[in-house]
Length: 392
Ligand SMILES: Cc1cc2nc3c(=O)[nH]c(=O)nc-3n(C[C@H](O)[C@H](O)[C@H](O)COP(=O)(O)O)c2cc1C
Image (cartoon, rainbow, N blue to C red; front, side, top):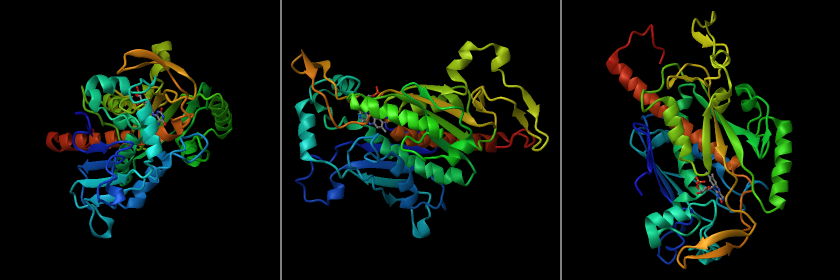
């Protein structure tokens, strides 16, 4: 596996599996060292306040077992800062090491995974993993393909958040659509005001009730529902993004499309723009008298033109597929026996992964924005562009 580091200057490297530790219980080591998730964050400046609580707050948004809408697995997702932080909780400039032990590893669940370890679970990742890693592929809890892997990203993103906070940049994600039920337009202020006011984290509180009822009805059928996450980035100056391959749009796509279960990403009006005329989709520009800045009357562009931020809010939407684990019998194949079989219904599942995926989107967006700030500032320092043109 060679793709476990993200970023160019601000970099996170993650390792760990969903049930890592299940096979090390016999060793004479503390339980917390059986297995879990690790994140190494490189490119952290010195003097940044970083406490376990700051990271925990982000992890707590993603952890399972919080409501009727997600999996009953009882992982505490407790994070330990292992390195890179010294007295007064200040970073030293060294890589920050973060550890999240797996604590809910029960033999009964490992046994269940063992029962269908050679069977392709439709919608899951094991066919690809089997073709790539053969008999060595981790068959417990989907290994690196598990949603659990994303806890390490959230931990890394929390470090990025601590740095972005100092620059006044805020990233906020929420559910905007579930199983075809859409919320109305959500402003940044509304998203902040209603953040996490319901178990779905949908700021349109009325629509959220409708969505939750629908998800619970789908759950009753033994089934699962897909949805859409929206992310707003507020406070990004104009000028972020490195044409041509590291455009802000390209980096966001790379970051977001790497999250399991994500099937698409739109920027601004996205696919809707394909149905518009140019006169409808172009955002008229004007000089804002108050700030003296160029602004745009509308924001179909989602705050990005030519792969570079315009200074308007960056807005993306992320399509999330229904949770693959369902409680319905499914036609499939036993890979070892090379024969057609039926997969029995599976009971432990999230009826929607949307309420757990928005913090992962927030984390990845933070990593992208911060990394691009490093790149832009580094380039600018050498290029020495006239200050009158740039406000980076
Ligand atoms: C935060 C998060 C939680 C997830 N939880 C589950 C889950 O409980 N059950 C499940 O079947 N899939 C879950 N997934 C989705 C699978 O990881 C993913 O669909 C699978 O690995 C196949 O990859 P793909 O959908 O990207 O093709 C989760 C994904 C994320 C990001």
